[in-house]
Length: 381
Image (cartoon, rainbow, N blue to C red):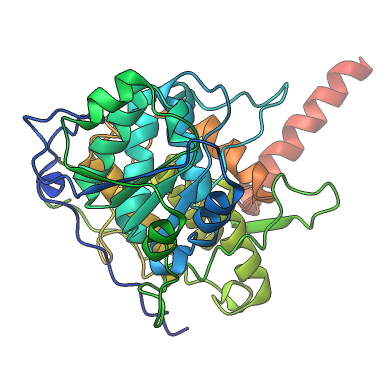
């Protein structure tokens, strides 16, 4: 099968490729490249402003509109709202599958949101009802925009609180207070989409999954895992056999593969977990076997289709932002995260296939038959 051309990689912001620690909280002495912030104020909450803001949500053109969860108190909730605005969803908790641990960690949640922003090329973000946001939430948004270069528009559907007005005086911003100015600011983009990374998630996949949804079985799991010695900062050593080539049923253009890709892009918010699920769907490898792979093609990792390459690129960005600190190798997930990957497989309705059983040799078969005969003789006596 001819490999599908991979999607172009989005360049990381300065510093992230070197693995520098990014602080998801705004600090004026660290962030000096903050784009001009636009504040749209409608003290009487006129509905026309909300319609304009939501009409500006055009992800193929790098523009998203976020409506924060009402009464959400912590910074992690706002990061989750950003992730959902990008078309990603956190798993629905139940008795057997609680929410993943990273969802309760504010810093990790913001780093995951930042990695998606970088990989998907988000250039403009509108946050509605910004007058209700706390000062820490404003600081998270500013830190994200300073890192990614995203232009931030804050729609305040009520009078600005005193502490918010004082905070605005410390950053470069402009205030729009008329419907005409807001209409010009949110004018629809013209021309073709700036990125083709959105063709795999246009909200065509149901979330939560439907009860009658079709399940897909993963390729057979190879018995022998790849073994590549990984040394941080160096090229991996050792030789390994190539991964099994996906069969015709795994062709990227096949409708089943398109369904699997759409589910992964919609239902797995963690980029590393989404990448592992994609690799399991393409190769049949277990999470433990994927740990021995390396992120670079040709060094344990086969050529993968563009829809999975986007996930891998996002996982790289997350690792560079120190959002995946437990494993220096992008694909080397710690064992305590494997249940979360299994949860993601379940959300995507993917069934793992156990390793193929090898037929026993004649010598082993004869030995088992003799042992069975001896056991029956003892029981008979």
